[in-house]
Each structure stands twice: as structure tokens, then as C-alpha cells.
Image (tube, rainbow over all chains, first blue to last red; front, top):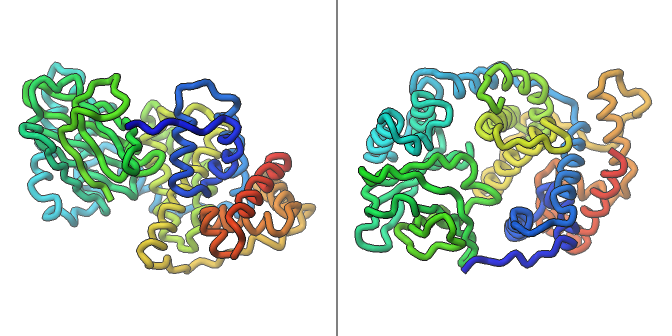
Length: 250
Length: 169
């Protein structure tokens, strides 16, 4: 099911200037990203991309620099600081988020406050309170939407993706996950009918059947997937087979 | 920044936000949208700083790359939705170039002169292709459609122009 990397290094290097300039179409960009991420030895591929990106960055010098207004830094500072929840972004979509807002907040707070399990801190790289605020901030940010997963087998549990495409942020929350899946949960991004890309391991709090993962921008790289698959295939899998839940993302 | 130090992010912002703002404004023609891109760019840097590996061009290349990508996202989203971004900012044409010998003393002005000169050295059709790609955010296929040029020719022009610019900048 996994799409092979059938691009040679010579072919890649031929496309590298356009890849670095970000002018390829989605299929070409995905093919290049797959080749670059491939485990085989490369013959100058990363250097070719870096060179193109360097040139691309240098081209920006042709436009005179222009300082943003002070409000931009204030907005950034407010978003990264340890500020009270809701102080940065408005909350226009509480109804849209519905029950998942409450559930997600409860899960996030539980994951970040319960002592002991280090894998519960998948959402808390910078500490519990900040991560909780970050999670809740995402839920209330402009443009955030909820993508529900559909169960593909009985007892598969339930999951939802809270995603903000403009900010390239995504949070996966799941509960009622089946016993025994603790060490095997994988999230896959599917681009087209047969191009699975592992996105992230999903840490699971096994005793409560709760899973959560802050996907950051990984969901959007190299391009947003057409749909997501949550499977119980383990870390060595190259494609999803024991599929629990799926979601359409477009 | 990778250590989660807001002061470090502020330093990075002071050094590179004007460049991100310039390219976003040039692409979007809208100051509000451009400032949103700058905000998104530095929030993404804050979240992804641990992945930065000091690529060639350093932080400046990274910032510009993210800003361009976010601006392209907005351009393509507006094209898809059919809602054009409202241009409210005066934008300068890439060409004709200013006389590089009169460029100022700052590094920024020297860079501007060097890149402007490099672009001027390209054949006109290659320069137009790079301008459409870089500043208008068009893909090769979109450039081909807009200019009535075969896609293969557009790809060839992008490749040749980038190789030439690699030598010049």
C-alpha cells in the first residue's frame, strides 16, 4: 500500500530548484518530499534543496525591508507568554466546538495534571500549564475547526482532530480506545488513494483509554493529507492495516 | 529560541521580521494580511525551533522560507475561494532596477543591489518567470496557464534562472 520512492537522485536534483522555490504542484512536491525523506543514501539531494532555498531567501532582498507595526510583536508575545486563557484570541466557535471543547479541555487538563506517567506529557513539552493554555488557545483560535473520526470497527473508540490550517497547528484527542492498543497506536496521513505517511505516534494513557498528541505542524508537511487513519499497527508498520478510525480532512 | 526563551525570539524578530514583512507585503499587497503572515511565521518558528538545524542561509533563509510559504497558502486559498485579497499597499515593480552603484551603505542595500543586478542579468523571459513564481506565488502550472507558455518551457526557465541566480547571489 505504501507508495515507493521511484525518483532517482538525479531526477530530484533536476527538480530541486523548483522545489526550493515552492513552485511545484502538490503531486510533485509530495514526490520530492518523499524522496528527500527516504532512508536511502542521497547523492547531493539535501544540498541541492538547501542551495535553492538559500537563493530563494536571497531574492527577498530585492524588496525594501519594512517593519511590521508594533501590534504584531504584541500579538506574538501574548500568544507565547504564560497569559490567562482566552486573553489572546476571541472565542467565536464555542457552539461549533460543542461538547468536544469540554471533553478536550478535560482530557488536556487530566493529561497535564496527573502525576507519574511521562508519556502523558506529549502535549506538554514546555510544562503543564503553558501546554494546557496552548491547547485551549488552539480550540478558541480563529479558523479552528473540528474534524471527527469515524469508527471502522466495533469498540474502536472515538477521536477528533482540532485543527487550525492557517496556524499549522493540530491536536488529536481520543478516548475509549481499545485495551491492548497502548503501544501500537499510529496516526497516518493519506494523500491520494495509496500514499500513507506516518505522522506521529500517539501516546496513550492506557488505563483510561485516552490518547492525545499535539501534532504541531507535522500534519501539514509536506502537504495536508486528504484523510487520516488511526491504526493499531505498532512503530514498525509501513502502512496502516489494523485500522480503528478514519477522518476526512478536506 | 529552541530553549523556549522569548527574549531570543524577540531578537530573531527584530532582525528578520522586516524582511518577512517585506516579502509578505510584496506578495499579498495587503498590510493587514502581511502582518498576519509575519505573526504566523514567528509563531511557527517558536513551535518548530527545536527542528532548526542551521541550514545554509541560517535563520534568515528559514524565516523567509516560512513567510513565503504562509503567504502562498493565503494566495492559493484566496484563489480557490474566489475571494481576492484587497490590495491597499503601493507595490513597486521588480524592474526596472535601480542603479546599483547608487545603493546605500547598509548591508541591506548592498544585498538589494546585488540581487537586483542578478535578476537584471537574466533573460527577460526567465526574469518574468521568477517574478511570477517568487512574488506572485504562482506554481509552474499556473505560470504556464497565465502566460500561455508550455509547462515544460516554464520548468526549463525556472531551472535555468535558479542555476544562474545561484552563481550570482
